Length: 112
Image (tube, rainbow, N blue to C red; front, side, top):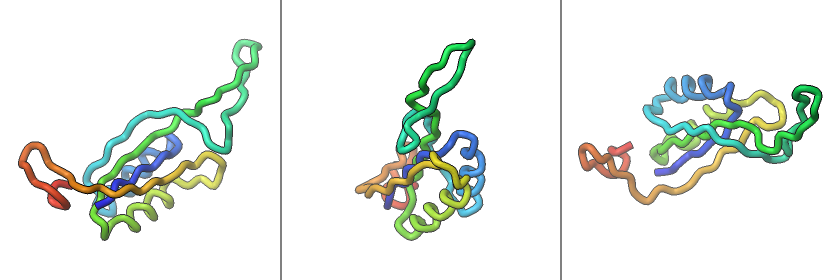
């Protein structure tokens, strides 16, 4: 089992969610986060004053998937989140040792 974590632009979130649902991903956790990478933020003008926005809004998606769905999950996220511009995001994959479903006590792939 793997935990696939994707950081994407907030306006792409619905597209990613729908695409993951279409390939059979049933659940995910979404968090509103802020950060920056190579784009290093940007400068904005507000009421005549210029200020720097260091941290940009992003959406963090976490999906626990069985090993056989990892590649398809990654491909789906890339296809649905990509705009071709700086700041499209990142995907991280980490190992999950064990998963428990609290309500039923199921473990492993059955708990996903």
